[in-house]
Structure formats: C-alpha cells, structure tokens
Length: 246
Image (cartoon, rainbow, N blue to C red):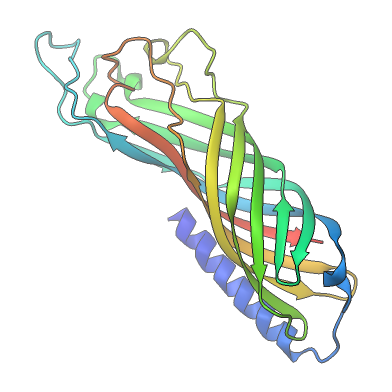
C-alpha cells in the first residue's frame, strides 16, 4: 500500500512540475549539460519489501513429534524509510550520463511466519528487522533533448548494498530470536524522472524500482529450521522516490 502511495505522489509531482516548467519562457542555466562532471545530492523516501520463494521441503514440527508443518506461509509487513546520498555525474554523450550515487538507506520490516502462529512460543512467529544500508548505485541516465526547462529521462543500472544490520556473523540464529541476513548484496535498478532547470540549480525528482539479484537470507544452523529451511529465496524489492539537487 505504501509503495502505491509513493508511486502516486511521485507521478503527481512530476506532472505538476513539468506543467509549470513548460510555462516558463526563460531558459535557466543553459550551459549546465555541457559540463563533463558535476556533483549534487539527493533526499528521498523508500518502501522496501521482500520477494519470497519457498521450497517443497517438509519441516518437522517440534511441538508435535512425527508431524510436519503445513505449507509455509510467510508475510512481510513493511514501513516507509528514508534515503540520503551524494551524486557524481559523468557526461558520456549529450543524451547519456553515468552516475555514482552512494548514500544511506534506512527502513524497517516485520516478517510474520504464519505457519508458526500456533507455536508453543508465540513470539517465534514474528521477527522485527530494522535495516540500514550503504547503498552504492552505478546507473546510466538516458535523457531526451531539453525542452525549455525540462528534460525527461530513464535510469538503469546496478547497485551494491552493505547491510549494517545483517547479523550475518552472529553465532546465534532464529532459535535464539536472531534473524540473520547477508551483509553484501547486489541489486539492479530501473526508473524514470525529469530534470527541471531552475535559476541556480537543477532539480530532478525520480521514481525507481530496486530488485535484489542474490538471496539475502542467512540460513539457520539447523538445516530443518522452521524459519529459514522453507525459504528458498528472499530478496529485496523496493520503490524509491528521490529528489536530487545538482
């Protein structure tokens, strides 16, 4: 639900800003795009979820020896987060730029293991995950020709995430209440946005999707763990709404 709100807000902002930019007759900072390298920063909000794929493996139920859990049922409850970072932009062609955008991304999630809600220990079914990442995207920016004070573009590239909250090296696992994730992760990103040329700087709102390429879950020590054994793949999928100032 939150990701839909981010998309709706983003599209309305882009449409409104484009309308007002087109009504302005004076071209601001006309030589801005001739720079070989320029810098900036961005602020934004995000909504990160997990894509989950499950195995067909039967998991023993320790509360009832000799029986197995039913088909795993895991849901993710997500909350919005924020992102902030820097921009280094290299002009490769009049319509193509390569961008490095290192920053920090923070958000929280709650994973509910619904197949464990009847466990003898109720809290076994819920894991709270508060995540802070060093997010380092390398993206190509494909822009149209400038029209007055606007210039639409699309983005595509890859990114590296360092998860400060991963707990990957923690010897304790879910049996002790510790949900572990991998520290090093890789993503691909696609998005759209519009450059708006203002009197002193360029303002660039964009919407992008971020999708994990590797499995981010760190399996428990027990190969029959009721938490991690049913999960074959768990990877981030998120929506970012960024506001760049260059």
